[in-house]
Image (cartoon, rainbow, N blue to C red; front, side, top):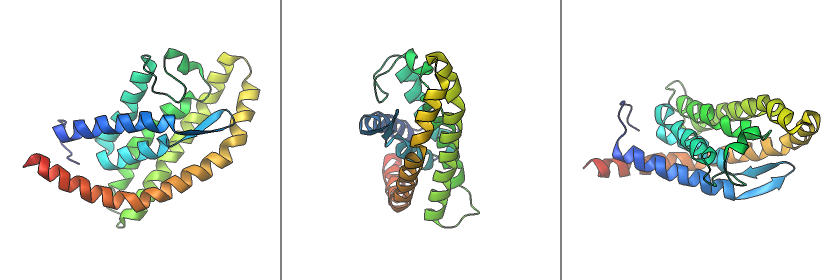
Length: 191
């Protein structure tokens, strides 16, 4: 996408679409212990790659702001109470994750679209899990039983990581096609 400092109409529309996809992907979930497994990570990584690092991070940021404002955007609702859930850090991790996915994807050092996509997705997952795991003690402390929350979440991590790696691999098949189509659509927008 365009690297200028102003948002184009096309980028605004694409950002709104990705926010809507993030909300929808939160609703499609499989409960695995205390953490619902959703398609949000896939949508956030895709937003970062397709919008780039300068724009992609805005999708999860706006999503979080609207959800914390009370809109039922998260997997089980919305509101400021989410700040005190042990798993809220995973949602905060979406912001640097989207930026990282976009930044790595745009690296000219990596020539293959698929490799850039997969490495970008892996870098995004490191941010998601890093921030998510660092946040657990804070959220668990508020709930009063940090050890129970920590052990419940950590026990589901291997399955979550495998799921996210499969989703990241799926992105390597989809991103080159989407990037081509977005460039064609953007050209039509500018005509």
